[in-house]
Image (cartoon, rainbow, N blue to C red; front, side):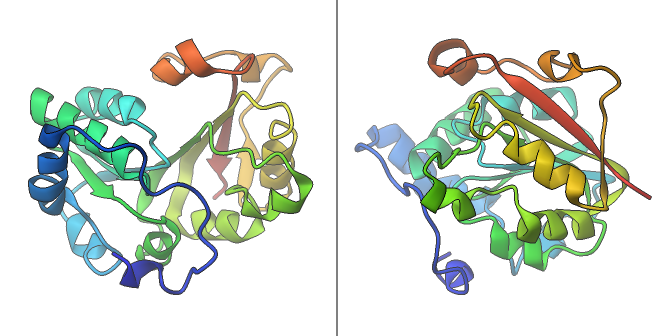
Length: 223
């Protein structure tokens, strides 16, 4: 997986936290290779699935598991470079017998560049790192380069879901996404972004570690 990230040397963020329990280390060694996708293998991995959803930065995987259990006909790809979070997801997959999740334990950008045009039906970017210091704003995932990538990958009518609880990131994400010609904000009234859709579960992060009010932003890929 190091080779896949070579062209993106400016990766920021944690790769590994505290030492994992032996059973999770074993899952990383044995189960992850069976579920892993790479930029080289993702084209083959998505064949045969009528719908493919992608979650960028899935944390501990709660949202990904919730969606996978309720949408067994959808292939969900989760990208997360933090291996401790990957291990937590693997334990949930093993315990619940989930069959429709594939994992990229690395920077998502090479995978985005490798996926075929119009191959994604939904993308989630939920509570990404806000990089609050101005000198770090270029590290924020939502921006012109990645929006161009997502515009190429999402089928017309597909949904891009964003969420944040950070007030410095809140104006940034809709501002950049609305400026992009491929995306239309799905908002009818000003309080729509305060309402959680029925198929958008609350995660443990939101319950315990959230900084303030969560905001839910939904954008449609224009035809």
